[in-house]
Structure formats: C-alpha cells, structure tokens
Length: 140
Image (cartoon, rainbow, N blue to C red; front, side):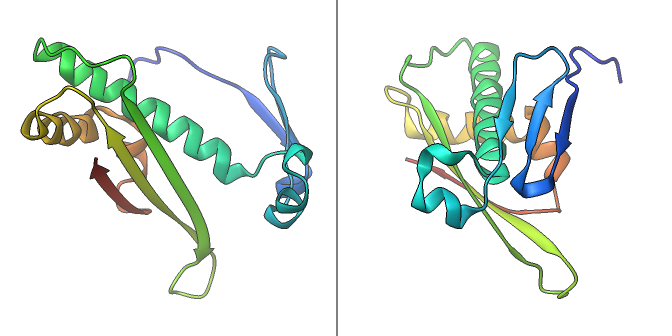
C-alpha cells in the first residue's frame, strides 16, 4: 500500500491520560465516562474521538462515491456515529459497537442507499474494522 498520509500520536496515562500529535496540532485529555458526565469540559473519551474520525471518514467515502456517479451532495449532508464499548461475549476483553446514521438531504433514497453501500468499500474505517465490531448503518 502506498501511504498517502501518516499521523503520529503518543498516548500517556491510558484512558485517563492524554494524547499528543507529533506536530503539536492535536493535544487531547482523556477522562472516564463518569467524570465526563459530571463535567463535560473535563476531557474526551476515546470513543468520542473514534466516533468523530469514523463519521468524518465515512462521509468522505460517501462524497467520493457521489462524485464517481456525478451526484451532488447537499452541504448539510451528515454522518453521525454512536460508539459504545462493552465486554465481549468471550469474557476476555472489550469490543466496540458502532451505529452510523447517514443523512443525505435532496438525494433520492435509492441512490442514498447505493452511495452508502459503495462507501463501505471505500472507507478506511469500515475496511479496518470489518468483522471486529458490531456495525449498523441507517440512512435517514
């Protein structure tokens, strides 16, 4: 694979630490979900960051699919990711559950479903997580 972009981020302190990008443009503090519920400004959970990255990548994949078909997406098209973490059924570790909700205003529903199907083959996140997470995609 020819690498088009590479990011380097170093985490310290685990889920209650922080992560800093090598170029200094990204510095995030992690907190436990319970601490965040008490004080939303205290920091972010890794699941929030994963949700942000997954939804951005998937929307980009939909945009790529639309361009290939000469379809124009509305500027208010969105992908919302809901990411949950829980114990896996094997009792050994944890797994992720992801729900993506896609909104493509002004796009025919049939075409919207086709774009979403094609985007699943384009998006790096759907490719990387295939078989490793529970994923549901809804087109609203």
